[in-house]
Image (cartoon, rainbow, N blue to C red; front, side):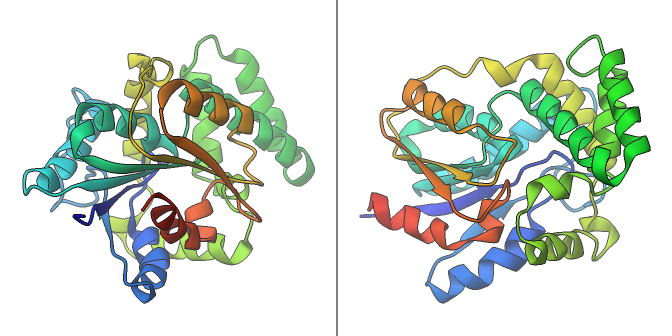
Length: 277
């Protein structure tokens, strides 16, 4: 059987795949595996794809699609691995190119961006109530002022979470992995968190309403991965999503991991592949 090329699509928006390349690659190499990593269009990486500000999310989407097609056009089968924000867009692309997809792995998939954003704010309010009480009050005030899913108060609240490193308190269970993630994203300017991208892609994505309409019946072997300590993804929601949208889906919970389970325990990337072959 032809080997499927494994293509990884990072979460975000506003980040890139460098932490995966630095943390996951060495482990996979020891197992004789290789992972191809896509990174979203960004002004911080002038040699990569360009972000179209007239349609930021679709620019993101077409960049991911072209990356997949670059393998399919060579006659290769692919195994798509998508983390967090990338999960639903990659599901749409898996549906479009289904006959070329050998396997699908969704890690901590965001099934509804609005629900995810609300959880992020609520969990941060609870956490900051202990560590940063004044900021917790401010987050609560912004949440009360909000009148839609991604209006100015919500945008301000989320930016204060993501770009003060607060989000990483919810993303990681293991301090060592969190430290490495920050280190690799801050090695140079072109690897940094891209606040410009985050704002424009997120706003555009929310306005399109794409996060809640994925309904399909994909006949692709699929793993849905959740870190047991991940408070941002609900187990029952992931189970329902798998039953409704896939003929062959299995839910795997990874112990002692949170939202970035693939960085905290990269072994399952190999184990998932073996289980389906």
